[in-house]
Structure formats: structure tokens, C-alpha cells
Length: 253
Ligand SMILES: C[S@@+](CC[C@H](N)C(=O)[O-])C[C@H]1O[C@@H](n2cnc3c(N)ncnc32)[C@H](O)[C@@H]1O
Image (cartoon, rainbow, N blue to C red; front, side, top):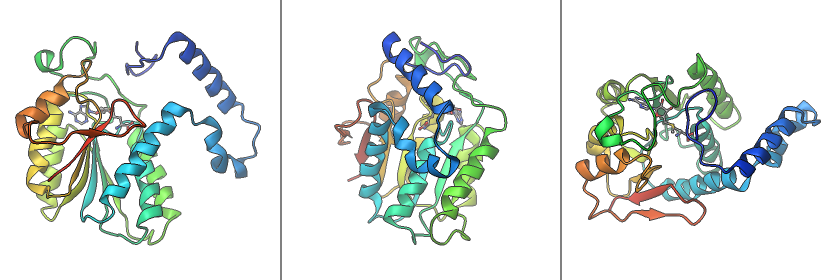
């Protein structure tokens, strides 16, 4: 099942979708005053959505004692980046080296491979797009996240727009100092995932955490194929957290 506007996949049942629609109507019609709205967003957090936040909280705790930046490969609306910025504010508000870098076309998939990505996702280049000029909106959100935490005058995030095949190697050429403490792979598809894995490999170290959104997922087989080709999977301890079904992680040993 696809979303109406941006060709994204939703696996919810009809009943779930109906309750979700009511939730969204109630969110739009919220009778809360503006100055109490942000503090009460938990009203609208469902178990499914909360589970992902709990997962990233556990992951963040694993990197607090390691050095390096956070990279998200596949940002889309940027919820994970914003959440990570908030977690940095909680766990290590003075760590100016913990830059958060997000890579995305902000125009949906680029590089879908009919063979490696298979038929089940029924996607095309351009699927999982976002609204026009979305990167600029997200930039403002991330600026506000930083403004509410210590040392806001030191910018600690970057959005890198364009096809990952070019932008990731370019970014790392511009930033040869980069160590990656946390890499989140969520391009969904083979080609950009493979490019990202190859590009960051020399920037990883024992203790780096790699998060994968689609390993062992038959709808998006390309992510697993890319990991197997670049790192092999037989020596990786691929773990999951009880709160989420799909997301997995590896701590490099
Ligand atoms: C599933 S979404 C990411 C969701 C996001 N991580 C989150 O937590 O909400 C996949 C993203 O990968 C991006 N993407 C796919 N192919 C790409 C490519 N070749 N270069 C850059 N971004 C790409 C798409 O634009 C899309 O936003």
C-alpha cells in the first residue's frame, strides 16, 4: 500500500489506517493553546511511533562514550535527525564534535536497480519524495533544536542534498577528519546504500554503530545485498531491540 502523495509504503491494516486518520484529524483540530502544544505532543505518539524513538534512545546511549559524527543516509522528513539532535542535547550537550549529517536527494529515490531491489516494493526513481523545498524547512527545524541546547552558536548539523553516489564521497573529501560513530542506513535501496557503505568504511572504527532499517526485508532486499557485498554478514553481530521489528544494528568489533 502506498501513501497518497509521495509513493511511500505503508503496511498498516485498514482498521489501523482509519484510527490513524482520526488521530491526524484530532491533531489538526487540537484545542490546546500554542504555548502548551509542543510540551504535549505525547498525546499523538502511538506505540508504533514511540517504539522507534525508544530504539534511537538505546542506540544513542551506545555512542555516548565513542568519538565521531552521526550520519544518516536517507533523511526524508528528518524526524530521526531532529530526534538525534534532541538526544544529543540530553546526553552530551557540550559535545561540539558530535556533528549530525544527513544525506538525501530530498526528491525521492535515485538509482533504483530493477535486479537488486526486486519487484515487491513497486517503487520507481522519485518514490519517497518530500514536499518542495523541504530541505530548507528541515534546516530551520534543526536550527531550533540546537537553539534550545547549550553552545548553539557552534553549528553541529549539515544537510547534504543530492545523489548519494556523488555527495557522500564529496563530503568525505571535504572532511577528511571524519570519524563516524553512528551511521544510519535508510536509503532503502541497493545502489546508494552500497555507495554509502564503501565511502564510510575507512572512517569507521571498533565501536562504531551501524543501524539498518531494512535488513532481511523482502520488500527492500537491496540493503542486505549491499551490506553483504561490502562487509560480508558472517562476522557481524546483527542485533535488534525488542521495541522495534524492522530496525537492526551492529556494533563493530
Ligand atoms: C525511507 S526514506 C528515509 C526515512 C528516514 N530515515 C526517517 O527516519 O524517516 C528513504 C530516503 O532515501 C532517499 N534516497 C534514496 N535514494 C537516494 C540517493 N541515491 N541519494 C540520496 N538519497 C536517496 C530518499 O529520497 C528518501 O528520502
